[in-house]
Image (cartoon, rainbow, N blue to C red; front, side, top):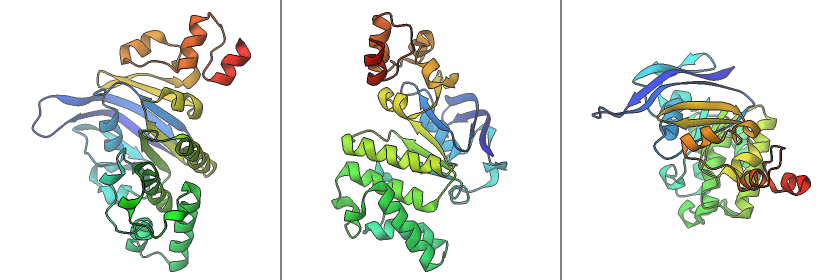
Length: 264
């Protein structure tokens, strides 16, 4: 089972300019995929079409064989979860507990299931200490984990993280790894949009490169970060340790500090 994006095109209403042109890729359950590229490459538009926030101008998106064309965003929510870059775009309750439980109670799940999912999401995201706090009284980096907790409680098979490391400290980056490891242990797919190449190199197996409103490369992270022509076309720099290794003439494909130290 997988997300299948087929020849996707999209233009914003009233605009003659296309934001996405003939994009195709497949993401299977259990994969970790990072979508990278400069601003304007079509990354956010593409994943918002996958989440059914936008409808494609042409082409199609299949989620486990389900065509999203005639489905609402709410109908796709049990399958695909989207964590926005800015948590303020998603939060609308006045209490952390209410925020996490909202969709579960809307679905009229049994009380014990609501509590189980809520508590699991609180523990995995590390925000239990804020359980009775107004969301907008929580520091922004931690508030982002509240929106992650909401998605975890819903339990979709595909989770999209939009710039998850933006504004995060070392605690936040470590907690993100805990969340992603948990999701992968459950067979979920993790899809991120990120300009943080160190984060991508440390946590993602596969990289999809977008430029000129299309996918220009798709492959293993270790290989993509050594495709200098592709990265230049996408106006993306590889991780710093990769750049240092290349400047030193190290033949091994280096992605992180530990590998660099070992190679030197």
